[in-house]
Image 1 (cartoon, rainbow, N blue to C red):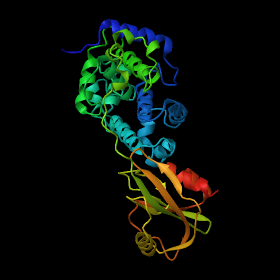
Image 2: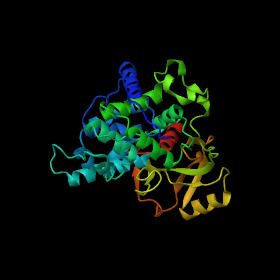
Image 3: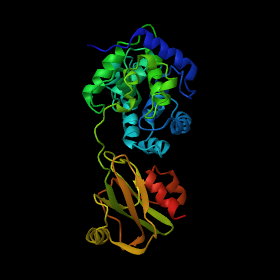
Length: 354
């Protein structure tokens, strides 16, 4: 039996959405660029955080052309603190791609789901969100909230983490717009999952409880079906604050890869929770680092896929810095340091030594 979002379900959803939708700086905008900015920021980030970053971003890069023309350092600096910096780098590449193909400055954007998928850094979620909200294209947005809602609404017995499940929900949503604007329907489903059908839902107030399979069977807690989460490993790192002639030595990560393009103090990270004395000695000898003292407390930080314990050392150089593992290096004063795009743990590091 093929499951189907009925017209009655969509109508009830939209009535609820009209009364409960949150006010957001980008909501209601038809500007594809503004929608694209918000959707790139919202991935794996809370709405409250994005509400702080969105106005600053628009002020710095008011349109796709200003973003495409900006140096990557400027892009990463404005993004600083949002995390998942690959998004910012891809956003920059995507803007350059759109500008390069734009037939006019007045109308540079793709219109359909499929054409948005050609833009670097744009996946199915973003392609559906921008094309549906900005252009009314009938493509369903499938995010974590929507997947959770659909699993409960139809008792879908599939692992939520699989591509098969995503494709099924995408197809399901594409058949459920009816005479409503696809962009508003997509936003309504996401809002329902964010405000109502949460990990701990208030089913009594849900506008779709009469249609919900999991609610009828009193099995709401059984959906969605998930794989067991893997234990997040802990990694140990060492970072060296090299300060000479009132300047800090900062090195820049290469553009691609984890935290690509960001600036940091020289150091290393091991895929283990314990310190390695031999690796430590090898690193400081190779780079002619002279240790002056160790900071009494390590800096702690968590990423989505590992926890980090960073040991901090104050040091100087016995010679010139020649390490080519990084893409660049600079000696900067405190004022110049603040202007460099840095990772959250690098910012924590300097906050800890104030």
